[in-house]
Image (cartoon, rainbow, N blue to C red; front, side, top):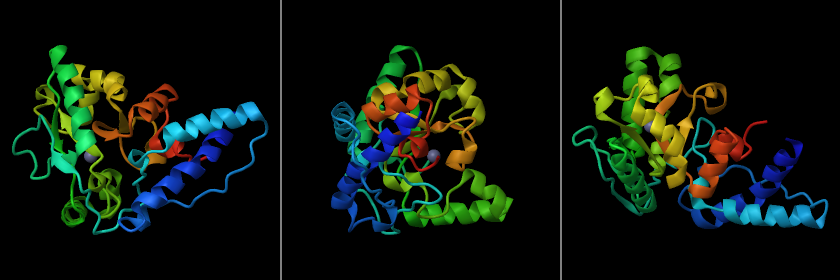
Length: 243
Ligand SMILES: [Zn+2]
């Protein structure tokens, strides 16, 4: 485990550096602190780290959570309507282009197994998240609302990298019981093949800050998704944001 931690620590440098180059002007608030890069202990370790760093350097590994926010004006430039979607479930059903493409593959693969998985909502602008969060605070109080809804700027939905998905078996609702349906189980076991992770897993509530959401999938790319699933990590742990 110590090796794994060192490993993650080292690789955080190049990843974040890449992000700085790409998104500084658009979303400066989203950038976590850049860790200093420790010297590698020997050549073989250095080689492993380099390979890993390269694989992990991705704009799709951006972290948006209760401590990392997006600028209120941030909107991805490559949004496209997701397919398939639950028509009328939300006015916001767009995803970033590569994410929409990956979701289509996921949905097609599920269909081959006789299952229907559709997007209910995707990208949400800051203004809409603000409206939603305030509505939930009015309804349930701030403490309760924070367990399931994000403050504006802190919602991953603003990144265009995640989607809420559902199936006819739960009437396309977003409910925890979705995790026990055939579709929900298939999603948890196969989403990584298409570059997605279940972003708020059961048992990791203290790390993610959110209740279990079997319907909320986040695109991180295939390599990261595979590793996150294999090691049973959250994105926070993968990006070494927690101990
Ligand atoms: Zn969601």
